[in-house]
Image (cartoon, rainbow, N blue to C red; front, top):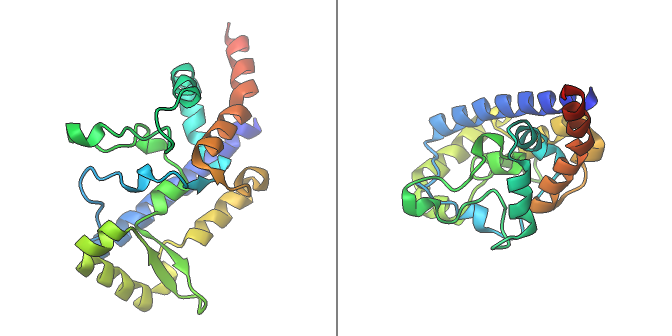
Length: 197
């Protein structure tokens, strides 16, 4: 089934990306501040539906889809539905579904964009820039020394685009992207559940 193939291919891209980002973090020393979640509190984050196909599939497979949709339908805030704003008070990270987070969530803080000269420039937050100046400087040095080895936003986006352009191209508010991914899998899991009865 095409939906299963798409999910598997996106998961492969994410697995490679996570290893790539980990290498960059290890070499530069970049780290998110403990239990921060500031980037998740932004209300203007955009993403594409393909980024959340693995999350949607996991929600269906684990039977958590109804609970999740209830949260989506009755939001208590205007940021990503996956973010738990009370997590830091418990000494936890804020993403409820971290393993299934989207491309933008994985890359921000540790990924690079290409400037006009096609050189990688780190895309990170103000907090990391102000509290991790040495690591940010080291990441910039690595980008100059090894530009082809940096995790570039556009390169990973192109890999998702090659999997399914219709799901990768539209950029929309993150919660809308998650909902579209859920809707794309609705009939697949409905038919699957019916055939298993």
